[in-house]
Length: 148
Image 1 (tube, rainbow, N blue to C red):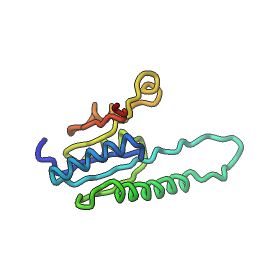
Image 2 (image 1 turned 90 degrees about the vertical axis):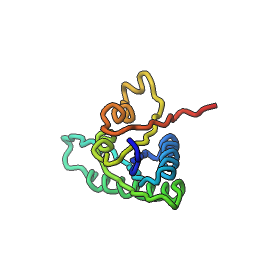
Image 3 (image 1 turned 90 degrees about the horizontal axis):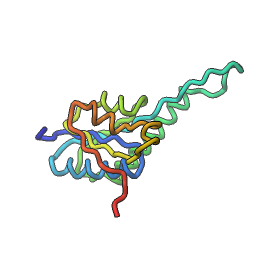
Image 4 (image 1 turned 180 degrees about the vertical axis):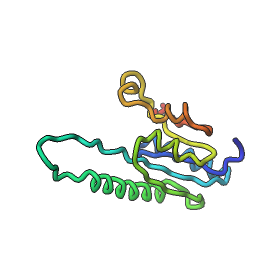
């Protein structure tokens, strides 16, 4: 596992994911690692319609989502990542867990766990859980729950 030369930190721009980013930054500073911050834009489901051609262009909408994600990611880097770190920003689209696992070219993944349990986890699934279960490299999960 050591040395940690590169760290992958996925973000969905939520506060828990920013907690994980903070931990990833601390580790990157400590080990002198490169940091890759990844955001995955969820695919837009194609809905069949027997009304006729739709004026809604899914490809254009997907492009706009990715463009906005790149802006948000750049802003997060400016506001939350120390200037002395070597940072790579990556925006892609697809299933979040699958894309995180496909992107792994790092020695460590630092990911937020939103702390959902019960029916919410069953209905929505857990990206962090799938990444932990299937990752070929160590995964550090950072709890999204606030401590008191």
